[in-house]
Image 1 (cartoon, helix red, strand yellow):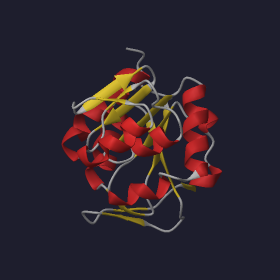
Image 2 (cartoon, rainbow, N blue to C red):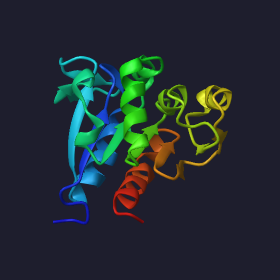
Image 3 (cartoon, rainbow, N blue to C red):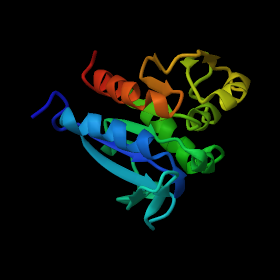
Image 4 (cartoon, rainbow, N blue to C red):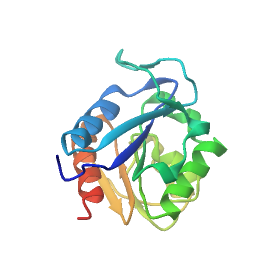
Length: 175
């Protein structure tokens, strides 16, 4: 029984080319703290990470309901761009954030949050190649591994995975 016992986290991964450690490290950190993780993707087929990990999604993104979770986390990797213009992903992120739930993204996935309108006027971190995309949507981009602005947590990429996981635990713990 950890501090997050009973808490549920939805992790959204690309159907292919998610970033392995951006999924595995935060998930392990959350589960160690007692949270349970569920994986959603645009396909029910096993998703392959950029480094070879294979993850079988628990449900389709279109069937995910923000109300069922305490946090919604968008995992990065080159495949995460599939959600940048995805209305279903945007609606999930907006619903979660609007309900005050922790809404998070790492690597290039913060572009999904920005395109959903969630980063306007907010501090955010992102993979360096995507900073202009966030600025174009009104984000205040910081060159930090992890940025937290209220219930929104963003991170810059694989080296930030451990700190991203810790930030998720802190946010879900109410600190």
